[in-house]
Length: 112
Image 1: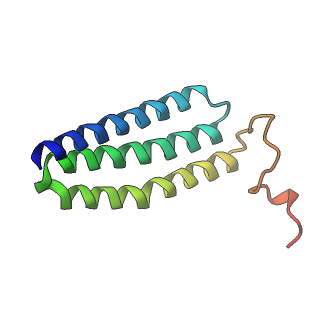
Image 2: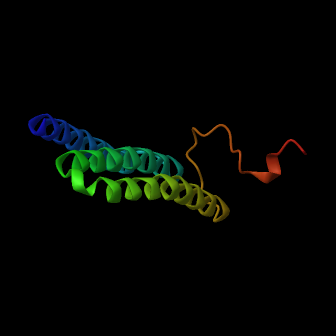
């Protein structure tokens, strides 16, 4: 049983590190700040949760602490990305030319 948890923990750590690497790559490759926020938040949230799950498999005594860290991460990461995107929009940071819909633009609303 211990070796099974060690293998599962190692696989989860590799998967988490891979998502974190892809999130970092997304920060470099995305065309504007809004896409960078999206790529960074989604990939790093999943990568960190997988890493925490891997550590929980390797150190079962830490599971409750790691679960609380994961819950805190799930609550704060999406909120912080939304606040960053809203602040960038209010600072008039221009999106890429490929952006077709701007749901935060109040001047282009439907009048409702």
